[in-house]
Image 1 (spheres, helix red, strand yellow):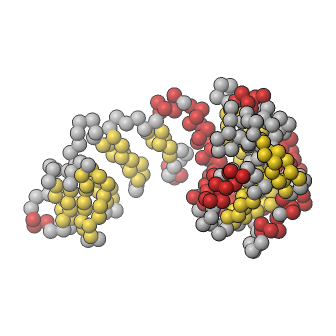
Image 2 (cartoon, rainbow, N blue to C red):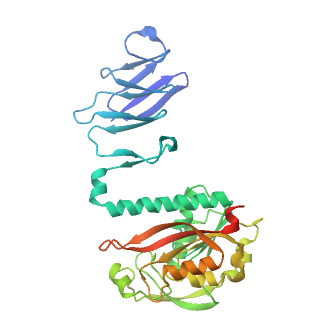
Image 3 (cartoon, rainbow, N blue to C red):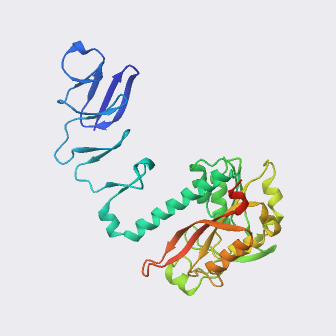
Length: 347
């Protein structure tokens, strides 16, 4: 691989690797080369380059390419271009009207080969985007991350630009240890080594295999063990269970005018954790809960029971997004349900 170098009024810049060394100079009297604008001349030691003007003082420079590696340039809109190798399978699918400036870059053959996998990943992405919309619109400055595992949810929030407080609750010691290491340099991310429930107690948690994402205070159902062997485990640990209303003052300390988002992902224990908030659930402006259509754990409540409980507490659905699916039957197993308190949506 050789390097393209362009020099102009702003000085020399290194550009992505290519197959030729290209050099732009300001003095057109040196002879030879390809003009770029009014005062730049492109000179190449490897034959004449292919130059595509991109507007706003930019050009795409392509040196001679081996057979089968030619590039195709497709203009998407007035300031966006798609550059791909000729014959590549990926295509751009616009989403909605042109004014949205939104599209999907997809490989149609791969989509046809694994349609449900692609669909699920797209819906997960939309769910993450929806959470961001809710956080920004409501001015959320505290996220209660219940069932944090190793911090995947909180890290996604940070990557998306959320800068407020995160309070993570994770009862499995091995997962909590990893989480504490990952958050050590984040002063506004708390980690509490406990589960949340309807009463203060100690319970045995069934530790899922691998990274422990499927750990639950409930034993696995027959379907759950068949669907994913990582749920079927004989390892149990006694862990502390706390009520949220007994911890809320502690975790909100130092936050002026707390605006709370409650995220529940406890593998079947969401309603118990929700009950532990007591009357202080009124302080929560928005929430999300993993709701079940096909129980992975014994005594896991059905989606209808969960949503009815949240609605009685004053929450209404803003979005519902699939989390996992049974590939054999195409049935959705669990959804993430996003909700807001009705007055909060109009704040």
